[in-house]
Every structure is written in structure tokens, then in C-alpha cells.
Image (tube, rainbow, N blue to C red; front, side):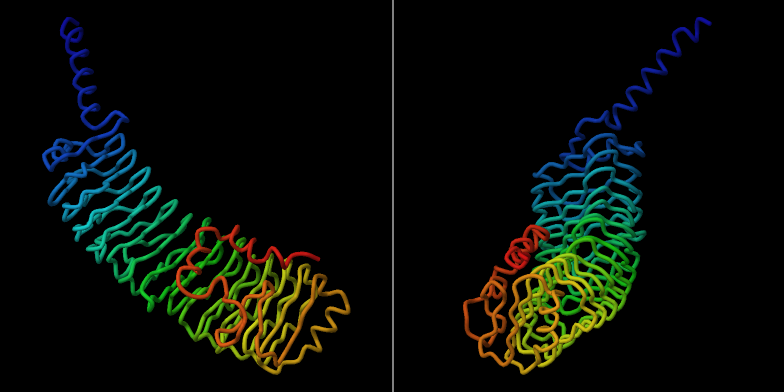
Length: 394
């Protein structure tokens, strides 16, 4: 009994020291590899791991399996590689910023993280993520040297924001089925090809300056679907039945849009400045709760199932299409808002007076060249509300 009287408190004290050595919820500071090696007996680090901006060379967390907190490395310009071969989860943010010489990122066991925020990693070309990250609340990757996103193997995600990665050639997130936040691609390599083959539902999706978008399984979006300044010739969404705002703007090579099952647009629907698009046909479209605003160089326009347009209607083209069917829809009060339909016009314009064709006159489109298209991406709902605000009046 005397032995237990003194041994038990000593054992508890030893356990307390061990727990403290693995973090107690406060920040865990890493100045050098020796600091990281000090946690070699820890499977779980409790607290935010903060790596010094003065860190130089390679950093390896050899034994850690879980970080109960964030992993933050900000401004460590001389860090060359980062690895944690046994790390399976990060409960908060995995943030890397300004690691301008980082060339290797190896997390072979990582599958779960609350959010990924990577910015300014120009020398990072590939990811060594053997198992692949399958769960993330949000992913934002900006200004890296990545050529693909292999290892980002998401099943579900909140925001998926991929911007300014000028070496990014392909993105194939084969397992992704649902996105609860914005999916946004902008300012990456002009020949970027995007494949989301099993994505069924989501909220907002915007694509800028990409050469291919494949979303064959997409059925419903609660927010917008928008394409600005893309270089693909054809776009197809064979299973899409419903979306909010729908935009095709300034896609210079686009000559075919196929959405055979689209029935409802819960917002505004704009097609403008797609000069190779000679025919517009949405055979199943029944309802647009905002406005229809089509302008360009098309010779055919057909929306044969249309039953209700709550907003305005603007259709203008240099081509010689017929307005007869739309005149009747307006007379029958199917189109309830302001109405304009003009064919064979030299200067087709959008509802707000912007040029509807890249070769026509009129004032420049607000989403035409340069930085203007980029301004819409961060504000998917708000931005399009502004674009279509004038069109929603009855």
C-alpha cells in the first residue's frame, strides 16, 4: 500500500508530462527539424502546429498520425520539402503560403482535412498523396506550379476553388459526387481540361479560361452555372434538369450547347458573345424565373417547351432567325416581362446594352476582355443578381 501511495502519483505525473509533450491545445512551435523530432513519440498532436517562417530545408513529421488542430506554414521561403508519411487527418486547416522553393509535398496516408488553403507555391509541381484526400470541407489552391491535382480524391467537398495555377493541365476528381459550396476554376492554364464524371449535385459552378469541362452526371444545381472566356467547342450536360442562373458569355470557339433535359432555370439565362454558336436549342426548357437574354450571331433559336418566363426577354442576333414563336409566347403572357426580339441586326446587344457579339458595335461587354470576367467569380450569387437585376422586372 505504501508503494502505491507514492507510485500512483508519480505515474500520473509522468502521463501528464507525456500528454503535454504532444500538445495541450495551444500552438506547437516548430523552428527546426529537432523541434519536430521532439514529437517523435506522439501519434496525435493536440493544438495548431505553427512552423516558423525562418525554417530552411526539409521538414518531416515521421510518426504523427493525427493533428488535432491546424498545420500552418506561412512565409517559409527556404523550405524545400514537407512530409508526414503516417499523418491520416488534420482536424482544422492545412495552410501553406509563400513557400516559394517547396518542391516536394509528401503525405502518403492523409485522407481527411477540414480545409486546404495553399497559396504561392510556384515550385510545387506534383503531390505525393498515395491514399488521397477523400474528405475536405473546402479546398482553395492558388498560384502553384501543380500540373494536376492527383491525390485530391474527394467524395464530397464544400468550396473547391482552383485559381491562377498556370501550369495546371488536367483536373480529374473521379470520386466527387456532391459539392455544397462554390466550384470555381479561373486563371489556370488555358488548355486546362476538367473532368468531374460522377458529380451529381452542387450549388454554384463557374469556369473561366478552360479548354474542356465534363460533367456528364450532373443533375441539379441550386446555384449558378457559368462559363466565361472558355475555349471549348462543345458543351454537354445530358442529365441536367435544373439550375439557377445559367450563363455562356464570351466563349469564342463554342459552336454547340447540348442540354436536352434542362427544364428549369431558377434565375436569369444569358447567352452572349459566343460568335461561333449558330444554333440555340433547349427542347425541354419550361420555366425561367428570371429573364432570358440571348444575343450573338445565331441563325436558329428554339425553346419549344417554354411555358413561363417571369422576367424579361431579350433576343437579338445578326442571323436571320424567326421571332414568330417568341412573339406568340409574349402575346400569350408566357413571357411576362419586357420583351424585345430582333433578327438580322448589325449590332445585337444584351438587355443592359452591352455588345452581344465580339464583331458588332455597341459598348463593350462588362464580361469581355482582360480582368473584367474575373470579377464575377468570387460573388456567384451577388454578381449574377447584378447582371440580371434589370431583367427581372415584370
